[in-house]
Image (tube, one colour):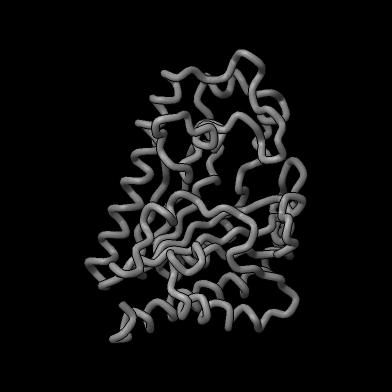
Amino acid sequence: MRAFEFSQGSLPLLIIVPHIGTQLTPDVSAALIPQARALPDTDWHQDKLWQFARAAGASILMANYSRMVIDVDCPPPGNHQNSDLWPQTLQDGTPSFTPGKAPTIKDREQVFEQIWKPWHQQVNSELQRLKRQYGYAQLLDIQALSSRLVTNNADINILTGNAERCPAAVLEAITRGLDKYKQLRYAVDGPFREGYALRAVARPEEGICALQVIIAQNLYMDEHPPYRWLPAKAQQLQPVLTQLITGYLNGVREWAASPISR
C-alpha cells in the first residue's frame, strides 16, 4: 500500500496535495454508491496545475488514496470517532456508502496505520529537513473545491489561521502580488475551516510557516464528469499561482532574515 508520491526539491517549500488520490481499498470500492464511485470530491489535475512549482524546486507530496478511504488532512481519532477522517458523505451532503456496507472499524484502523500515519510522518520529516538546511521551512497545503460549493464566490481562498500559521508580513507579500490580477477574486481566512496539516505543523516562532490555498475548480477544469483538464483556462491561472508562490517564498525569506521576526 503506497500511501503517497513524493519528490524532493531544492527550495525551502513543501507543497502537499492531500485530496488528489483516486485509489480505493477493496472494501471502500465495493461499498460506494454509483455517484460516489465517480469520486467527485477529488482534487483533479493538481499534478498538472502545480508542475511549474515542481520544476522550480518545490518538494511535492501527493496522496495516492482517495479521501473516500481516509482524509489525510483531518486530525487523528480522539476520544470520539472523527467522522471527517473517514467521510460518510460527499461534500454536497450525499451519503457515500450503500446502507450497511460502510467500512468496518478494523478496516478504518488499517488505513489509518498504513496511509494517514506515513503521510504525516513524511510531512514532518521533510519540514524538519528543510528547516535544518535553510533555517526555516514553508508548507503550502493545496486543495480545490467545486465553484458551486465556494460560498464566498472567491476564486482563491487563502487560509492562515488568522495569521497564527503564517505571519502577517508574509501574507502581505503574497496579496501585494495577487492584487495585480484584477480579474481574479481572492479572500483571506474566509468561511472555510483550515486543514489539519496547518494546525499540526505551523510554528512560525520556530521557523515553520504554513498556508492553505483553496482553488475553485472552474478556473482550470470541467467540474462535471469526466472532469476534463482545460488547458486554455489553466494557462490563464498559471501566472497567478506563480505569483502566489513567489510572494510566499520572498515573504518568508525576508521575514526569516528580519532580526525582529521571531
